Image (cartoon, rainbow, N blue to C red; front, side, top):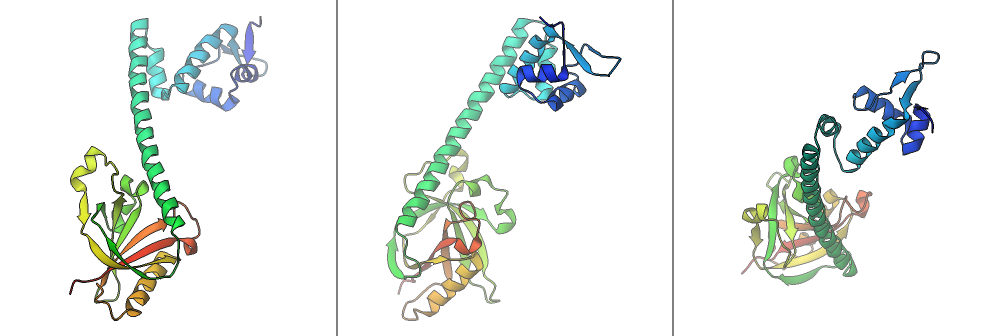
Length: 256
C-alpha cells in the first residue's frame, strides 16, 4: 500500500479533477499532509482517503461547502446523525417541489400538444367558451420575476388604447380541473363565459397584435370588443425563432 499520494493520484482515485482538490485546500476542508520540498507537489497520506470520501459523500447529498465545514467540526456521532437527518428532510422537501414542478410541466406540455392537434392557422371562427380561470401576472415590467409565468400557459390581455399603442397585461391560464398551489388560490380570477371571434396566428407577438386588428376590421358585421385575449400556444419556451410563435387570438363579441 502506498504511504503517500500526489494530487493526480488522489484525484484519479475519486474521479475528481485536480482543481477540485485545490479548491478544497483553499477552503481548508481537505489539505495535503505536506508539500514535497523538491517540486512543491501536494502530498496526501493514504489514510486521508477516508476524509475525502466523507467530503465526497456530503457533497453528493447536497451539502454546501459551509455545511461541510460545520460537519467536519462535529466531534460526536450524535451531532453527525442530526445533521444527516436535517439534510434528509431538506432532500425530501426538494423532491416534493420537483415533483410538483414536473406535474405542472406535464400539464403545460399536454396543453400545447392538444392545441397543436387542432391547428388551423388564419381561419376565423365564432366560438362559445365557458368560464375560465387564470392568475393575473401584471404587466411585462414584472412578468419575468413571477415564477408562475414559467410553468403555466400565458394569456396576454390586449387592451386597445386611443393612442394606438395597446396596453398589455398578462395572466397564467389554468386549465379546467387543474389544481392550484394553495399559496396562489386567493389570486385566482375568472373570465366570464363569452362568445368570441377566434383565429390562430403564426409570427411574432407584435405581428399577432396587428393580425388581431386586421381580424377585427375583416368582420364589421360583428359587434366586437376593442380588447382581445391572446393565448400563447407555441412560445419562447418551445420555439427559439419568434416568427414561429403561435398565438390564438380571441376577440369577445359584445352582447346586443
